[in-house]
Image (cartoon, rainbow over all chains, first blue to last red):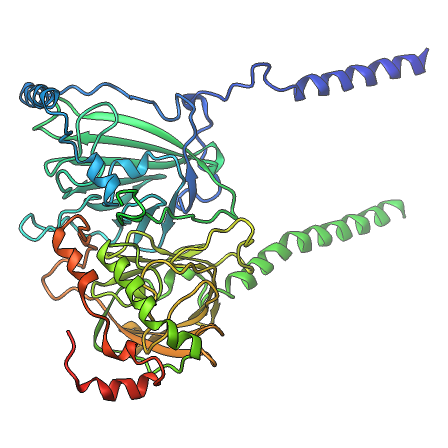
Amino acid sequence: MKSQFVVCIAFAIFAAILTAQSPNPDDTPPAAKDLPQTAGPNPHDISSYWELKDIPSYRPARGTRASLTPQYQAKLDKERAEQAKNPVPASPIPTASRYCTPMGMPFMMGQSPPINIVQAKNEVLIFSEQHSSARHIYLDGRLHPPADILERTTNGHSIGHWEGDNLIVDTVGFIDNVGMTGVNGGGVRASSSHLTENFHLIDNGNKLSYQATWDDPEMYAKPITYTYIFFRDPPDSFSMDEGCDAGDTYQGQK
Amino acid sequence: MKRKHFRQCELRVLRALCFALALPMLGGGCISAQSPGKSDPLDSKISGFWEMHWDSTNAPPATLTAEAMRRREDLYKKDQYARRWCDAVGMPQIMTTFRPIDIAVGSKQVVVASEVVPYPRHIYMDKTAHNNPDIYEPDVVGDSIGHWDGDDLVVDTTGFSDAGITELPGGGYRTKKSSLAERFHIMNNGENLLVTSTWYDASVFPKPHTYSVYYYRVEAQPGQQPYSAGEMACMPELPSREQLMAEPVPVALTIAKQPIAVAKAAKSAPNK
């Protein structure tokens, strides 16, 4: 009798363990908002290779639709009407791809290959495997250069600081019409754009939450914000840069 | 008697527990001290913007193999193609451009970013072996691993391709068979950086070829902003760049049977 009781208890415990280990029946990842918000053991070091995955709440395909100013909307409508009459597209995108122009922001933060973040003492650098210049985020307390000496680039001029476990980055000084300029949700990166970003580790440091807010009074009636969730790649990851060749022979022009 | 024995056991357990807790802390301290002569590699003075001046390069003339001598003209034309189409230049040009380079020492990686080319150098500090050649695709900057020797950064690079601009200071070319050993050494209390490079490639050099580059730290002038990286706009679509392909090959490279040192003396004849 006693031995039968012991066997029953053991069986019950074993069954409980099996049940607890059963996978989610539909194998669906948790929504971004449900991920644990803990930063892990080193919340102030975001160095790693980070990768986006096609999970809707982790990288919204379109994001919140931009609220454009009437003036900018009218400009877009006019350009579309003219392009409809002209078979040659006016967008800079074909030029950027054909001639290996630096793609720049915001494209390099939303592309499919992993990005590489290297955090030094006074600077955070972000690299893309696709044809983009490095992002330099200065943490030494400097201000943006005055407009008359600011050298405009596809990534802009970025300064950052820590607020708790959040790396807050402020960027101005973008160049117009060079590289891939489209913003998630609508609008484009322009010389009048102002970008604010928030990087912070979640899910015990296994993921990086990235929030971008674009503000441009010439383009947006109100700022547009979107969020990506990056996955940390294994520690033995390494870069495999694209190696774009703009030569006619390579591009099949000859 | 039993009570005294029990307390002795407690003490033994307590001592063992204290030792077990202390050991990782001692070990961690020893490991962190192996980083560049300081407790934190992020304090390395190698981080920062560095530029070259007119006296920066010390590159003695290279001695080349007969095969490399025969190939010089063709390789020069290949480099001109890379220049004409603004290709990623790779090593060693990324280290010898006319714009400052940004070296950033991170916790696991040292990167060298150039304003002239989009692809940086990644020097992995947490690896002791190069990537598996079965999965690693050679590229213009190669596969670099590094370690600290005191405050010096020592780098070993393999996995080069032969794309981009391949010519080396002093002569010779980067090929798929090349490997490179470098030492980054801080001088003058952080105001200067000396990078000594030695190329190994039996197809090009009968003995390793060594040169050095002496960099100057880019400092902000009083009352000025610190230096911020720019972005060079090489525009391959410009028709004027086609002229690069039409330029004649330098005379020195067409004298296949003479060493480079002799060829330089014969260069008194004008060439474009």
